[in-house]
Image (cartoon, rainbow, N blue to C red; front, side):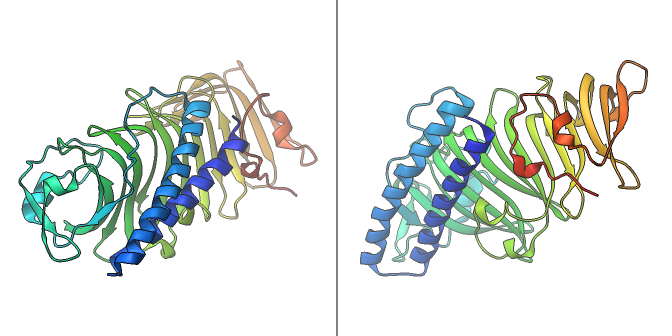
Length: 341
């Protein structure tokens, strides 16, 4: 399956995920049992369609290790109101960690004001909002009978001003993040949006970096709301130790100008977040932004090495830089926005 074919499938998953979120939010503000039961039925249908598409992605793109019972088949969910200190102290704020919870821990109140215990959450999903230092969390997910994260989960982190600081959507198996996941992290005035797959010691997939957009604040969101605006860079390849590290030779990095045109295109190895290869290809906008320059050969510490082993030349404005890229690159054409003169 090509990248061009993959994008519509992912977009569809995000759309269906957004439907689930909207249904949950409506349930929070509704006490109508009939409405909630009707939403249960719709959620079951949507989850089935999501699972079909996620299976297609896993089989055709990532070819992952298969895990049994990763997907929850139960469409029901529980609202946890006024979560207890005992419960909040037992669950991990970071979904990528493992926790164990005692069966008789009281976790809070349900929508009817009745006491809820951990055993009431087994084999179902629940959602709740709770405070953390410096902000609050909106969470939707499930636990297995050992008290470990299990199945699909969504977490939105907000600061005290109601600004989104992090988002994670993923699948868990006995407390461990597995398979494909989607994540947003906020760094200063940027968001990093990850569509990646977990391997042993590294992740593989795509990372988009966007300028901060105010409309993301003060509400639970899904990825389709966040991936449409202000792209500053794109990376496809391996990440380990929170850095771009890839020695496959297939990694791609694109940096964009403020008006959305390519400032830099690199295809090759990465080491500790920098260009590092003996035979990579890079195309860069010159300092005057009047033309592109292609540098083919050795890169070290993020820079092209002019030691005579490669070559560098200006690209005439009449020439399309896409034609100079290595053959066989599978990249979405909408990312190849070259500046023209």
